[in-house]
Image 1 (spheres, rainbow, N blue to C red):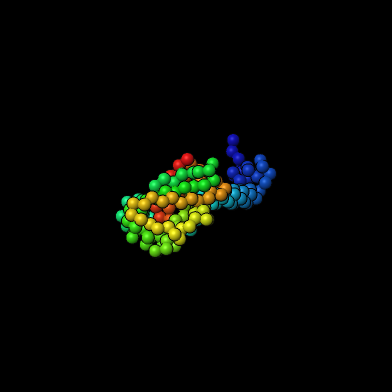
Image 2: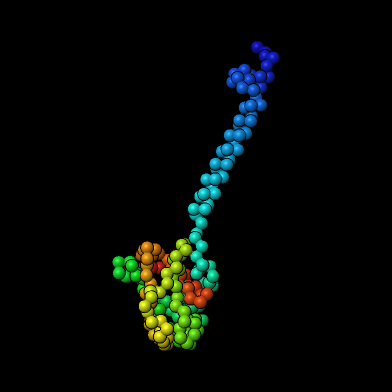
Length: 175
């Protein structure tokens, strides 16, 4: 059986909508779907971005061996105290002259911060310590306390020791 109708005519007859209108609707639907997909992908990428941490971004990463060889400091344990409300960092001075230079001079003007990796959180040493009287000695072991406001740190978190543009990364926080 032959038909004088071409494919477009059959579609017009069966659907009742002119072919040009169907193509416009399909194009509009495709544009709408593409816009929704683009918005969802943009949101997902935005959600996965690591927050900007100025302490980490503005520093040069060193290894534990480099920190000790070049700056005379060996970072020890970083652990949670007082039900997680405080963080203690222990470090040992292996070369007092190098360590004193890293800490900002003879009066030890600067104290290390702990930058919580993967966040924009930076923990500052707890106020009340008499850091300006910190006398760094060869072989001396020292500890600093940091407040853990909001419990940003949990056991297993990773932090970076940052002091005067020098950073030792991937330090685990212990319970």
